[in-house]
Length: 296
Ligand code: ATP
Image (tube, rainbow, N blue to C red; front, side, top):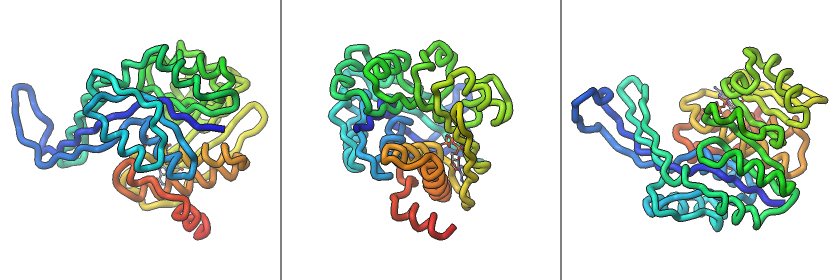
């Protein structure tokens, strides 16, 4: 069975600033870094680093060809990436001396997906394959419909939240992976227990993974509920904690392991990611995760 990540690829332009630019002001940055990003790209890399053979579909412009190289250098299959005549999705991120940030996002090619691109990509996949998607591209509802019609297992990480999500055919989603804010928005509830109660009633065929940062993670479906505490870590940067958790969790599930096993491995992998700076580079390899688990 194949794993396809259908999602966003971004160029993150990160500027270290003395202070955020004010109206009418022009100031030089203290430093600049260009970083591979996008939820789709990070989750594809997390799956691949976890050991899952992974395909990535999405769209970039000419300026984003290095993102394709980056995915390939992590053994992600990029045959279904489209090169479009528009700029690659990107973010301009100002970081001030206190570590606060302010961000402009331009969706670019991520917002130019077409129904033909979805159908063309999915023609290479079949019933029983898995598709992992987020909410950083256009055509989200169409991707869910087209994939589930083919019998492909749909996994949704509804990030970033948007009002449009509420009109998506969420009853066709098999797996949801949510953080606390996304869980609250989808369920209309405030506590994790209430969120899961509401979600399994509303989507009785859904399987829910709810991650709660340092508080751990829950799994729930209409028959069972499991809790996985987080693995203690010296957190220095929680970027990609959720993406790492997602990659390790679903690699374990696709490999046929029980949910409790998948939760434990995912928590151990995410605890390593939070102890390191950065996004994709902070995602660990399986030998590091094994070592962590053995030390517990
Ligand atoms: P992000 O958007 O930062 O990638 P997220 O909001 O999607 O993250 P979280 O719920 O914050 O996801 O974290 C996912 C998992 O990562 C948690 O369930 C937990 O296992 C692990 N984790 C997060 N923060 C910590 C921490 N401080 N210490 C140990 N583990 C952590």
